[in-house]
Length: 316
Image 1: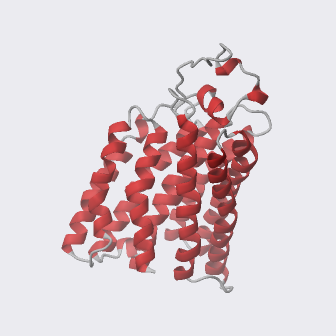
Image 2: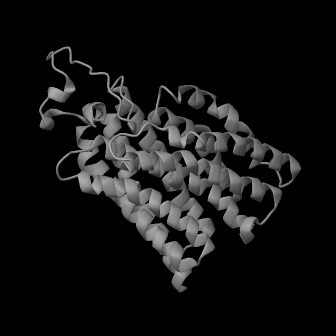
């Protein structure tokens, strides 16, 4: 299990976080995203070293970078209400790596932080890179793209709220008991399944390129299976019914979420963002781009004819 978890963590540090930062705000976070692999390299190296002082020191360097990133969460431009759903999702994404890095420092030092087993601390690292960062970010992207669209508004807002809430409840469950963790898993699963449904039904059909539609379809389909596994495991921990081992969960739930959901989603949304130049997907900025063929802005185009990229550009 250790090698697989280390590979997933390395992927999260070196690719998922910087790719996500470019989607959050390609202007203000451009330099951070470009330099992030350098800041994350010590953390990625630390997971491959034996526990001890060198590994702890490298993990601490990564933790400093993550804490600096978390400090930027309040500065993310918000649109609409103070508790704007996409803004909450983005703030959750920016804070999550710092939680993962804190667990990493303790685990690399062999210190049972708050009494948690080292194996639990080790699994907290990928959890908050993928469930915390990637899942919250994608929920925010989906909510922003579908903002104000009749028939999807409530579900999109619910996803953007419940993914961060579920992630937080799972974390609180570590301190309370298995039933509290099960509640967190239920909320998180509901939010992720809402993201999957909206991606499949609303985002995928309007994506222009076939490759983008395939990536979106993969990310949505994978979530159905991986989050069902998460529910099974949490229910088993709470009730004692037979359930997968942590090793099996890492090989299925963990790997599926990392590759099938996070990587496919980020690749797809980067392609969608490339189709909407001048638009920051989660912060709501626009440039008022005009279509050359029709001489009209995307905001003037009939709703039925607008692509996901158009909605990213013109959503409030």
